[in-house]
Image 1 (cartoon, protein in one colour):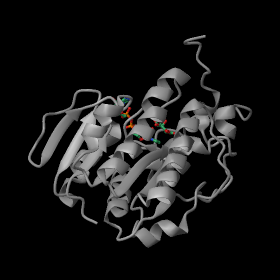
Image 2 (image 1 turned 45 degrees about the vertical axis):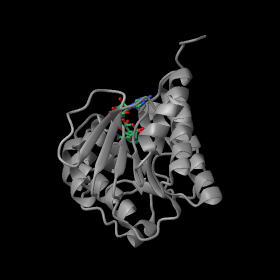
Image 3 (image 1 turned 90 degrees about the horizontal axis):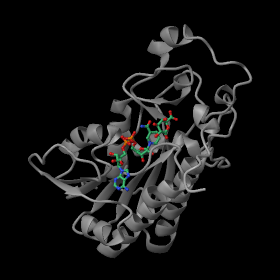
Image 4 (image 1 turned 45 degrees about the horizontal axis):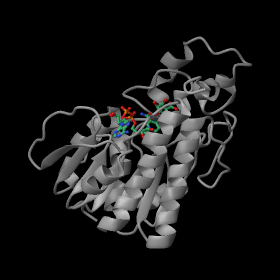
Length: 267
Ligand code: NAI
Ligand code: 15L
């Protein structure tokens, strides 16, 4: 499908800023939303400030859109109370608004932290056991279940992207396996929006690496073929001092997230 009006939540953020530019040629119009300030609207754009924890505001935000790329929320380990507002309530408000306003397709930014307690080196399919590595990973796991529910019950299509590390360049040894280039992110989201039929699916958001931790042969059926790889960065990254062999950040796929928190706020 070619979205007539695509909503991007979290549009002021790191990934949102890239997708705002990258998806523009592929949609008729865009509504860009965040709780943080954003660059003013350009041609074919609307800019709307909205807190995802505010249910009526999310309802108004979604009205008139036919597809959503949902990036908004807390992107790392934080106190549970904050994650509940932005990620747990936020994702329910968004899907509920999608149902009420007839949105047919969403792309949900899930995370590798849904599976962060699998060992590094283990090769996972998209159907692997979930092993969240904190409240953040739990919230993303919940979001995947919300997406599944809205497909099973109301036929609203979703791709849940378990994004690895989406940064300009890989910056540590773990990213030899987890890096997703900005170009590949853009192409993956574009493929999810353009596919004639998407259904419900979980996809890894990762570029093509020599020793992958995540495999998904089905992604190619959407037309997604990653263009980038961590290989050109290997020499530089392998010169970095390795973590201690017993460090949990070296043992588990979630890296340093597996040892963050819990935070003391609210106790
Ligand atoms: P980011 O923090 O730069 O962007 C997230 C945006 O959400 C921010 O602009 C923030 O203001 C907004 N936001 C936070 N709470 C909100 C609320 N209550 N209401 C409305 N907006 C709110 O993060 P980034 O890196 O761009 O990530 C985007 C999405 O992708 C996040 O959902 C993150 O969990 C997910 N992701 C990102 C990865 C990465 O490598 N950058 C890896 C895995 C997942
Ligand atoms: C994520 O889910 C985070 O949003 C991002 O900031 C990175 O830390 C990434 O995972 C990662 O695992 O590298």
